Length: 239
Image (tube, rainbow, N blue to C red):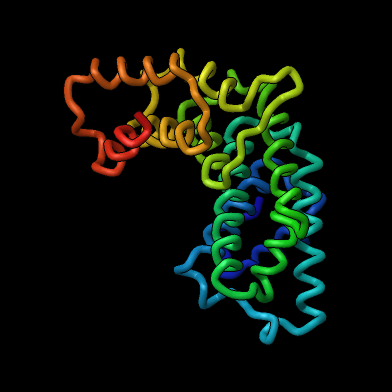
């Protein structure tokens, strides 16, 4: 098993994961993308290498490694459990959000350009839409097994990249998340509730029953001491 938190650069994580590519299970793959999202964050910008710092041979190797790990992830998606689906979705979404923003500020280079090409694509973000649709399709058969944290993370991941997958029968991922969430709202942590309702509002997904149940749940609480100011702000904004 790979301990992804041990790696301080995307190159280190990619090298290690690629070396064990055939052995990577859903938990390892989801952990990899979670770590990549952390290493893409602003606090690690000094560790992200530019085109000038990445020699051609190293750039081609890194691109091949990341593409191979991505292909393995997408190919194994139907074997992922709730935690791995939610974690992978959130990892992908955070990377997409960061490289999209960086690309809007300046031309992408090196590692960030490779991640942008893999997760967003060149044609109007078509690759990105396909990725989150695939995760939604894999999640649907097991959505009743998701706990509050996984449901909240799945909704939040889609919301931060503006994704609202629709299924063949006309139902949406957010409909299914609401249906799975309502019976277990009592088990949701304040941040999970906050992120959930924020996500629904962010993508414009209307679900009056979910919002009514959330409101009733919050009113039934003896106090709101466990809600941080940002949690309450998100809930008020969503309503």
